Amino acid sequence: MKAAGYDVYLCCRHDGDEGMVSEVADGLARFGFRVFIPPRESGSGPGPERHAAIEKAPDFVLLSAPSSAGPTGGAGDPRAADLAQAFRTRRNILVLADPAHGDALAQDGLPGRRRFADWQRVPYDRSRTRESIAIVAHRLVSSSEVEERRFMRQVKGAAAAVALMLVVAVGLRAVPAAVKWWNRPTAPPPLPRYVLYWTAYGQRLQNGQWAALPVKDGAAVAGGDRVRLAFSGGSDGYAYVVARDSHGGLSMLFPGAAVRGASRVLAGTVYQAPGEGRWFMADAQAGPAAIYLIAGHDPLENLEELAEEVDAGNTAAARMELLSSTISGLLDGRHAAAPRPVRTRRGREVVDGLSPAPPPSVWPVPAGWSAAAPKPSTQTGLVSAVVELRMPAASAAESAGFGALG
Image (cartoon, rainbow, N blue to C red):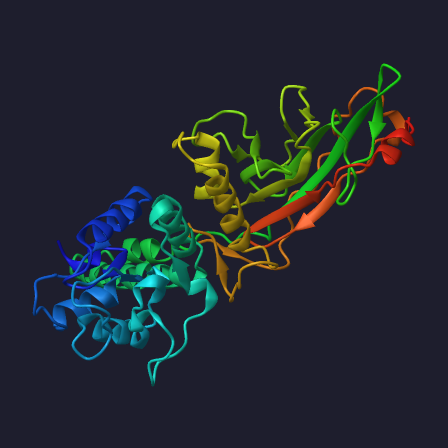
């Protein structure tokens, strides 16, 4: 297969751990990547074919697998020439390495080479390989530089095809038809910054009646209290609501269906989490520590995995790592660096100044709120937007002094 048919160049030792190389390649393939693995025969070194493959694959993953010959990274290691070529051609470089390997090439100490940024390093945990590979995939697809390079390759390819069509059209005296084809719109329309409109409701049982409880970031919640979120997006996109308790457990409040695509939301439509008039009840022993509302133009693979519950063996720590890595990598203007232009995974540029859809005029209000219902808040991001509601446990005095709001 030609190198142009690949998305990721997997740079690995010729005598490295075969099982680790296969597991990483298969894991990236499950996320939709086409993976190129260079020849791994002993003595196989850098050459024109490897350089061409690096130039035509926008993503470059340096894999540090244990070698029977011990730590390498010098001139005898073909990965050194591959990495130098990746830097020269400005590939999207990530390093997946176990720090215990002592791989010199995965460090920053080599002279004459730029340092790796923190986001370019992903630790390889052999006890949680699925999560390590998921983080690599998420950081690759979140890079706006890669999307920009892919978009420019498509533009160059389209220009070459147009030139050929013009030659044929002139030969056939069909210049008007060719001009019409040339002038057709090809670039996808831009998108505004992603905007979230949201509000939160709470209730506490007082004297046998449910009374309104204000819910905001930092508000104390006691065991038995119940919470519900309502939200709407300023653009069509994907949304997720995740509750974290004080013991590290996670609950997916939205989407409610464990199928891919259930996270799809439409601008101007109000969604509730949990849905169908239900409430999220705070457990008396492990009350909620935080609720996260995350939405954006693109689906988030880590949260899709949480929603689908594909791997029933996922531990609480593994699920928490998926959530944490997703939040830290969000292109929302507050977490991961977002060099301009910022593009979605489908190549659409996010442009300042474009107006999102306005918030809905009618919002659902639980019984008993009446005039005390909170007004929707607005959270603006870039490709994504996130709302975090931290909820410390209420003390006995705070619970006893609570009064109904309306």
